[in-house]
Length: 252
Image 1 (spheres, rainbow, N blue to C red):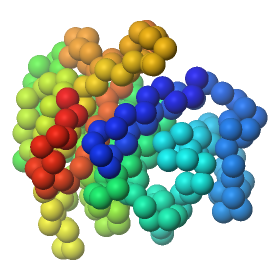
Image 2: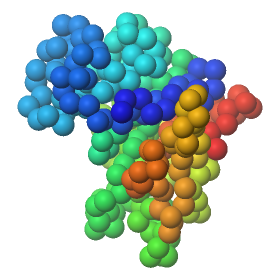
Image 3: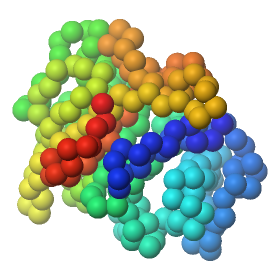
Image 4: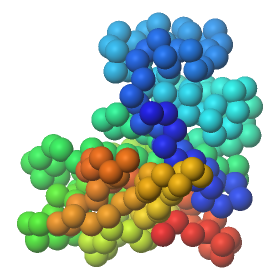
């Protein structure tokens, strides 16, 4: 299917989502890999990892042009080679998401809500965090916490950060969209963040019915692609002062 949404969150931030339905040969024909890309690609053994790698390059070209290139630091955090934007990448199931910003660090996480996340909640939640006791909403609430922590982990460069001990998501009501707050505290990091859960409807220029819509279904998020429901929750994050300094920033 390819790129199912390209959405400008503000003047400098772009969000793109790619639905992987192509095979390796098709995706390979859609991208131009440099030598560094080819070296990294050859490391992957599984078909799924190869498809994810190629879909990222295809989506990046769709968002920023064919000359855009990704490089990685020692913690495997992605950067644009020309340094023109901050970038964050997420994969889940058959979707790839990229969030870019020209003036602020960003993080994004996309999760397929399938696992019994409640059985591992003790590994990433701390005593300051509150999760609903309502059985209907609990799984979704836990996934929002997980996505939030994963995105902040990406923003803060991953190294030496414990989800449970160093990242705290402030208590929030269970909602399908809105803003929540989080913080990262380590010996080197002391930062607070505004976290945005977007609820966006995007339609194709040809008039195709909703391409991307998050709706409520018994407390869960439903991601619609051509009316195919897949249970997802995506969170994108920008540092708090960016939102405060730009009154036109609207993610809801």
